[in-house]
Image 1 (tube, rainbow, N blue to C red):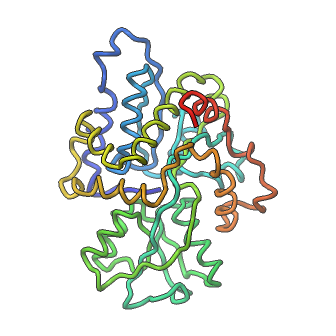
Image 2 (cartoon, rainbow, N blue to C red; image 1 turned 60 degrees about the horizontal axis):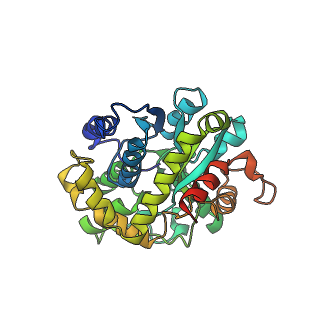
Length: 333
């Protein structure tokens, strides 16, 4: 639910090509399992930890081929329809309403978004009553956050528009085309740097729910236990390395030659992004085993994305934690 469909689209092909060719010589004589990965956006600097883990998985014989889609909805449908094996996102409503046969099995990151408004028009949440807001996409964490805050403050928006990509929304705010939205940390910093007197960040309080999680059908997870296990083991190890030292991501990017075509303006954002993300505790060391289900049920029911109460919902209807437990048994923790 993040990222940018506008100015950075030109380097998607290069990023995917890098993933497809890394460690090719080492694997020339090795049987490789290929996993088709559906991403509802393009690959950019905040996917660097994922790219590092995928490179490591490939060295162990599991090649993950990323296909960017225009939205999380399309990525989810690709998994449901068998066009992809694994998806990334939080399609809770789709699973519940459509009885979609997919389950979450790893929490990549917790939510860290910032509601930003034009402070010449709005100064509090109450000021957004009857006003237009813009979020990432239907069913996204950004929509869920704004919906939950509307309920909490007793307000109702005039309209909710969908504009994928935090950078796209931030640039529109700088141009004055959007007056109230919600963006990621990188683009919140951009707005406050470029126009500190124009924008205000509204308070959220603490939110621990999933921003990005991996999901697949139980049939795929059961039939590919070894490959999924390797993927999760490498994700866990990379996440822990970054939580110990956020600069690890920068060093590994240079060593592995990842994201070579990253736009110059984002070069300086890589390390600050991971430092702030680690400080915010958004990368779980345990893949979300300890708290993802509980926190997600509380958040997505409060926001209206899930129907029912947290106590009524059953973890097995949304999550398959067996692969994660097996991976944790291998790497510890």
